[in-house]
Length: 318
Ligand SMILES: Nc1ncnc2c1ncn2[C@@H]1O[C@H](COP(=O)(O)OP(=O)(O)OP(=O)(O)O)[C@@H](O)[C@H]1O
Ligand SMILES: [Mg+2]
Image (cartoon, rainbow, N blue to C red; front, top):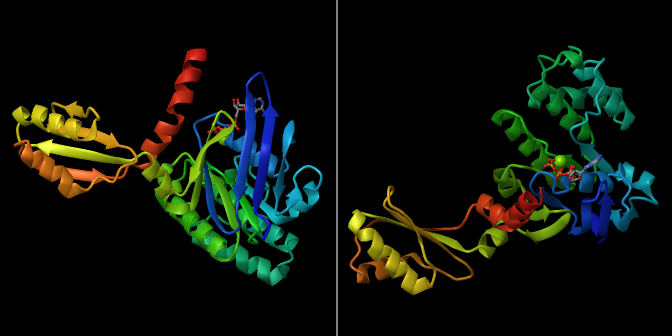
């Protein structure tokens, strides 16, 4: 089956530093793919190229097998897009906006009205639905923008930071809607600053930095790639050095020692660290541990470890 999205060597320049610098990407059909990256990484530019809003300077991309430049019309017919720039009309009410979109998508008068009501209800916009959108708050408009992109489930949906700046309830409603679209067969590519969101929603995560892909994989695979974090809390300050030495001699990694929290921490990459083994080593060193934890890193830690260097380099260049 043809992939939902394929990008090969995409380049898009705005100034001396390219926004996309040879971006390669393959997104299979079905499921949610999250595009993660620091500010300026090229996430919005990538979405704009894939959604036919920006033409790349080099490279090529297809959506459902259609070339985003040569077959832009076909691409547009198979995608939905929600981003910062709302596709809704401020001089209409929320309900009117959605009904018009439903009719444009051939839902018929009744179908369009029903779909509008259902979406307004779910996103807690029913009370405001008959007021002009220009009187709505920023968060309400953002929700309407997202709803507008899913009046009819598109085969491929691009969401550029769909939940940024929204309250937790709205965020949860958006997550639920994304889940339903995927169940109904859509492929969703979203960008997000919230790693929790990627962790929770995405089957695959693509980390980009400086306009290139720096890592891909499931959230779990990415976490595993930076290893496990071992954390030991000791009973007394006098145990800190012993605990640190025991862990260092075992793993070959010098742990970070927190004198105030009476904590010793280290990250072990690419090894299977078992909790009982940690406890045994501490016992053998005569250390009294109050708490021993072996846990996977958060996606935040993965993200920082993958993008930290480029960021530091950017800082120096500036
Ligand atoms: N229209 C434009 N004109 C000039 N430069 C642009 C334009 N659009 C993007 N850029 C530049 O391209 C780079 C990538 O921008 P982009 O908006 O794609 O990043 P992003 O990953 O979406 O960032 P953010 O997390 O802040 O949304 C940035 O350096 C940005 O300044
Ligand atoms: Mg952006």
